Length: 276
Length: 260
Image (cartoon, rainbow over all chains, first blue to last red; front, side, top):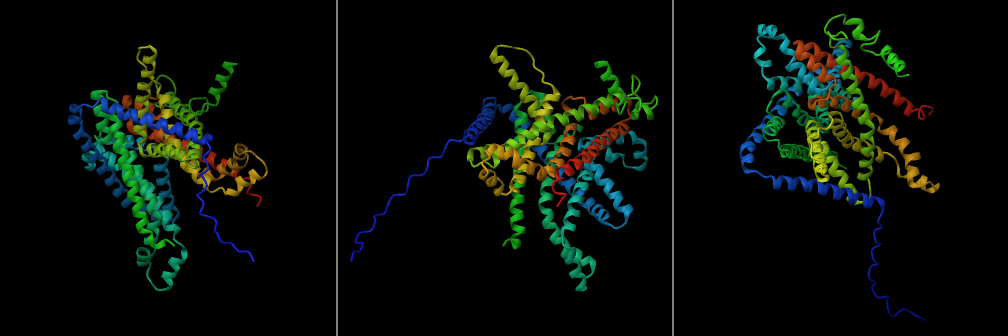
C-alpha cells in the first residue's frame, strides 16, 4: 500500500498577467494627460494672475449674483410647479378642446428657445405698455427680474406638466380600479394612492428639470439681470480678464454637482422600499 | 451654371422667392423683401440658424460616439477622461460654454501665434465658435444617450461577430452600429431639438441668426412683440419640420422590425 506522506507545500500565487498596452489604454492616457494639462494650465493661470484687489472688488458681487440665480430658479420652479398641475390635468382630460389647448401650450413652450421667450416678454410686452398700464400690470413687467421669472415659470410649467402627466399615466390602471372597488372616493385615491407612486417616478425628471433651469438661468444676464452670469459679464467687461468666466464655471459646476448628488441620495432614500 | 443655380434657388426660396411667404403676404410692409422691409434679413437668419445646427450635428455625433466608447472602455484612464468630459460640459450652462470657447479660443490662438512670432489681433468667427461650443455640449449629452443604447445591445452580438471571425472594428460597424442607431434615435431626436434651440444663444456673440436679425429689426422699428413673435414662430416651424423628418427616419430605422 502506498500513501501520501507529504503534502504539496503551499505555492505562491501565479504572477499577475501584465496588462497589455492596447490602443484604448494609450488613448485613455493621452486624453487624461490632455485634461490634466488643460485644467492644470487653468489653475496655474488663476494662481499666476491672482489679484487681491479684483477678488475683494468682484468676490462679493459673485456671491450676490449666486443668490439672484438661486432665488430666480427656486421661484420659477415653484411657480412652474403650481401652473403645471392644471396644465397636466387639462392635457389628460377627455375634453378635446381642453387637452388641445394644453397640448398647444406645451408644444409652443418646448419648441421655441427660452431666450426668444424671454425677449418676447421683456422687450415684446414693452409694445403694449399703454394697455399694461391701464390694466395696472406695468409695474410687474417693467422689471427685468420679474420678466425673467414670468417667462421661466411659463417655460418650466410646460416641461413639468409633461413630467407630471407621464408620471401619473405610468401608475397602472389597476391601482385606481382597486381604490374604486374599495369605495375610496376619487379625490382621496388620487392624493393617497396615485400621487405617491407617480411622484417617485417623477423624482428623477424633476431633478433634471431643476438642473436644466439652473443652467438656463444664465441667459437672464442678456436682459440685464445681475445673476451669476450677469456679474461675470460685468466683471469681464471691466477687467478683460478671462479668469472671470472660469470662476463662474466653477460656481455652476459646484451647484450642478451638489444638486445631482443630492438627487442621488434623495432617490436612494425615497425608493428604499422598492429595492429587492 | 452659377446663374442657373441662383435663379433656381430664388424660385424655391420659401421666404422671398416668387411663392415665398413674405412675398405673398407681407406686401410692402415691415416684412417685405427688399430695402424697405425686414423679410430678406430674417430669411438669411433662418438659413444661418439651420446651417449652424446642421453643421454641428455630425461633429457632435462623432465626438459623442468617441466619448461613449471611452465611457464603456475597459481601461480606467479612458473612462475617467470621458467622465470628466461629460461632467464638465453637462454641468456648465450652454451660454457660459459658448463664452469660454469664444474667448478661450481667441486667447489660445493668440498665444500660439505669438509663440510663432506673429503679433496681431485675432477675432474668431462667431459661427465657428458657436459650432465648437454647441458640438461639445451636444456630444456630452449624446454620449449618455449612446451609452445607454450600447447597454441595450446584448453581449452575444459581439460574441457572435467574433465567432464568425469578423474583426472587432468590423463587428462594430456591421453589427452593433445599425442596432445602436435604432435604439438611440428617439434620444438623439430630443437632443437635435435642444441643439436647434441652443443655436439661439450664438446670437449673443454676434452671429446673424434668426434671433439677432429679428432683434435688430425689433430695435429699429419698435415693433418688438411682432418680431420676437416671428422669431418664436420660425423656431417652431424648424422644430415641426425636424420632428416630421425624425419620425420618417425612425420609420426607416425600424423597417426591419415591421415584418414581424
